[in-house]
Length: 190
Image (cartoon, rainbow, N blue to C red; front, side, top):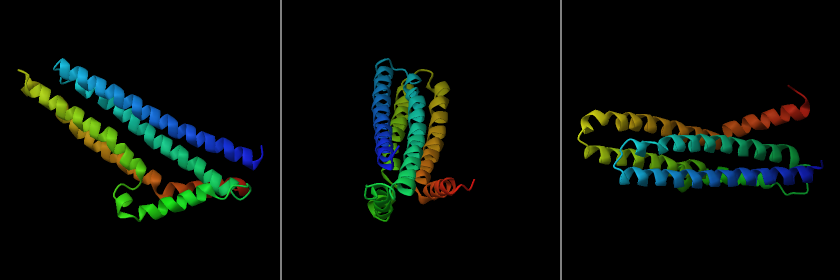
């Protein structure tokens, strides 16, 4: 396979990863809203916590997808751009990303990926708040308040860990590790 064909193939894979991520976000948030609506209609403060499982899965997939995208883009910039007719797209995108991280608007979020993760994180917090609101009207509220409280503590901790993992995936640390690994592979150093 020529470098140009490999470049095209890998760019297609990057687009597929991005589209899969967007489809997964759309599906997960749609199902979450349906479950929240169902729980509100039935005044069930426990069912409204069910979307947290889906949202946690979504956030883990966002981290895995981001790492996959970075691994592929690093391979393209390290191994293919020098050999192909393309003008260093991935290298320039990485330079733009680094420059935008110096911008105060982007620096607060680290990149668009952690900012994008805020949507499922906020949806999870909404689930917990709705659960509290429903359970406050319950006659056995005192016994059930423990469940959303535990969910809140775990969700906040989990959200912080995901946010930090996404910031790490966007930093230069993994990219530098991928660059070194690809260079070692190309030179035959294992």
